[in-house]
Image (cartoon, rainbow, N blue to C red):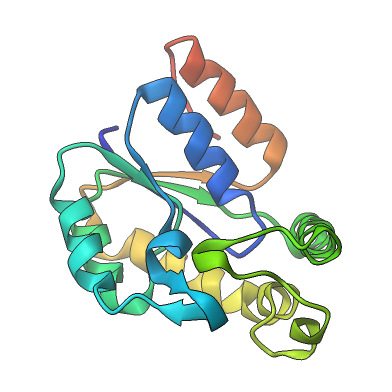
Length: 180
């Protein structure tokens, strides 16, 4: 495990897990949304593809994303492992609701200096609405990629519940990673 993608729907805990695995394996961690959004009003990084290409060319890394469409294949072609947080909506929705509510209330600064706002909750792209509406499609996409012969060399670790992920992470920390 030298080049890892942590995939799953918004709110699954990709960033949290990627940071933890980064610490255990001493891998450089790259937060995809921080690479993508670089300015106020959710400004998209004009050098995004170039920067992700640089990350992907590295020999060791972990990224907390399936990958934005313009870099998805690049990341999947270079990764050696995909950790798939395939949690049901019943797990995802309370997490994303809590996270977005906390971020909105505390005015937490996010990528590019942006913040979640009360008005943002009305957007179709708000994380809560996105997690709900994209759950099935995201699951199908990751499953399709995991079965695609092009990506057969990838080791895909699919976790269907946070308890399984936590147990795997514990085993990784003590040196004997397995998955379920």
